[in-house]
Length: 106
Image (cartoon, rainbow, N blue to C red):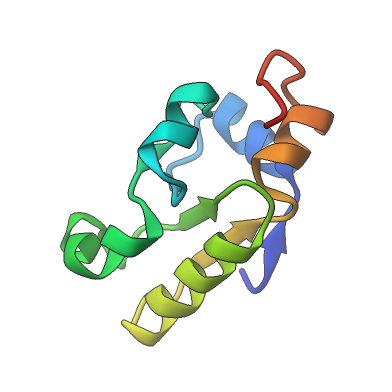
């Protein structure tokens, strides 16, 4: 459960119907340009006041554009007591390259 997860692994989890929460920590204008439909938008700056929307019993996978903001989100969630938290390696840029070419590469 530790560390990053490859975009292809997340896609496989979605396809299998695995239970997890995918959060997008980018800003709303970025989300409007491109997004992973299964992702819940919680901008990084809003995460501290919206953390109650997440259940620490769930596996949570975070992503942003590349990796940096979601890494901060993962650190924050771990400090808040969440145990099952991972980060999509390379963010939505990697998702676009490896999983969904129809997702614009912004």
